[in-house]
Length: 604
Image (tube, rainbow, N blue to C red; front, side, top):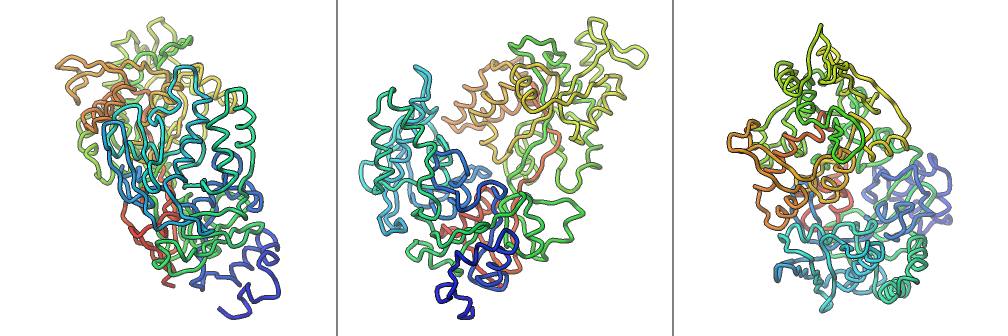
């Protein structure tokens, strides 16, 4: 780089350079301080780009505003381990070892090679302080007699480099590590943000540990509203530290004392803010090198992308589902309180017609409903891909089977129109989803079969109120599908999905698995307890039975899935990492430079 472009030797400060405005500023910074022809900077699109200005961002994971703890906090803070939800596996980072010392105690051993950017030693106590703060918040918010956290009971640091996590119940080691390193209150899973040597964090920690209930509200009000530390003053512990913050770009320089610094052959990492959340155009124009999300793109845009366009995070996706009101404990008369009616509608659906409306972004979910990510089934990377071959596969426009199921429930077909057992025309009310092409296909299939549909669009507040109270027949749903185990999280299926689809938590499935007629009778279980048993024992039989329950109960049916990938320009950059990191973690672009398990280098 020419001497005149070195900001430390220039008569203009970098902060002056960064003040030129959203488009011009980015172009100027990119051209003068490490653009596409430089080895100096890896430029990433900010995934919260249309939100808070960089100069107003903070790194307080307990303050829910501004998402400063993720973008760009994940650049400058490291976490104990890297958990890959796609592979359900753990990679070491600050913690180099972990074990269950007894059924309910997890111990993690920290490396002594990490320091904060001010030179302070990073210790297990820093992370334990963060966990203790989170647990104190949860304890104050919990109802009397309820667990503050469903898994983690307490946390302590018996010495500088040992974290001891005490659990409520026995868990397998992977499930234990996954849950103690996940978000408890805010965005804490992005890294260790609390330095126990920092007076402000220590003061907040002490207050949370010692306050009575009458004092907690004011303490939490302060903690969850303060922007401390502001990004420009934040002291991290990752491979990059704050260099400069502008109106539209955040620049970080390599922290030479990071354990992985020698494996990083570029000196800066920048996160760029634009006016909208779509990275396609700046990526195609060479203004950025990579983006964490928003790929793949529509077919008509693909020709604009760089020759070296390469996807990452390919194991992540979002399911597009048909959601039924199963009618459990709701005061609303819906035909879908009958599982046979739900099955009949799913049989009438002709998923092959969806292939014409995918537009290069969505993928057809061409498997039996089973609550397993489509990417996993497509790759065959999990035994579930074999199991589902024996499951009932709906979506085949099997009108004969649909007829049998409806007639079992007392429905009748007269002159091409279906009637309910009460003699009324069978009509399904669909709440929202008019923009979903798969719903358009379903409505066409149902109408041709003789079932009428009524499409109703409501505002967001009404939609949320009605799905929670169970005042609908069908509606769309979209949910992340980022790993086999993640699909069955306790706060997701028995909590959230049950609250909007209103299925009966006491499940009954025909046995053996794969036989909907139940030649061996039925098996009854509680969905939440079955998930817990899977987490404790790691026995795949629980998972298989849960999948079969989903297939035979159908609170929702997967119609399409949309990959939620990121991308980078491989013409200039080489990213080498295990599949579990590069394709199986949400923060792959942030994590790869942090660990010796992976590498990122400039090759342009």
